[in-house]
Length: 297
Image (tube, rainbow, N blue to C red; front, side):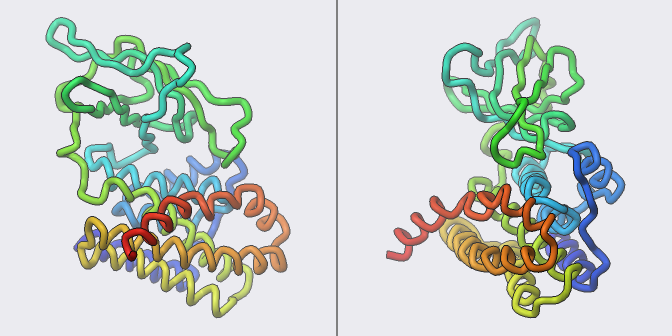
């Protein structure tokens, strides 16, 4: 299948040393690298792997996995550029939630969302809207009339990546850009950890190969990457897929502990960037491991 073939081809490039991290001190630099390397041209898990391997810091690792997730979870997203899934809304009541109305036979989106990934450079927005019968998702572009994005001054976690707000004022929505749960893939609910953990292992493997081989780290990260691909190759779904993700998370957490010591001894600057956002390592662990323990009895 195309996804598996693309992934394994890029994994071979990574293991051979042909795919290496590139310095990207700003989001603008990361965006340029992404476009130059045509990362979005890969299948979703390949996006996570290639982006993770190119990343020089955890913020870009998360973003690479997130972009892979966006292309898997929302296959209707345009192939090029960056996308973000807008779900969170203001809890204070100050800003109205996103809503759609119908006027002159056209749907129009108004309201706000309180978290947008890479808000300074994102191109495509998948906006979840609560409706009486069934929630819908609408696809809009950042440059459409009525779309306004702003960014937080100092996000606390993954601060190298801009994180912002979105507001919409009577944005016209085309009929072919309205979607429901039937348009989502079977493993939608757990696609984010699948892709982010893939990006994280690609990042650790890329830097391990660049800084001087550590046999255990190379073996562990490459094994985890093949494990991530295997979930697609064998069409794992439901609890089978979930437990595979939980196992991937547990193995990645242990590998990351060893990588932290390795990075500290080989590249102090990389180690500082790693430590600053080390929360990425356990981002999904609590929920994954708790449910996995319950499923396994």
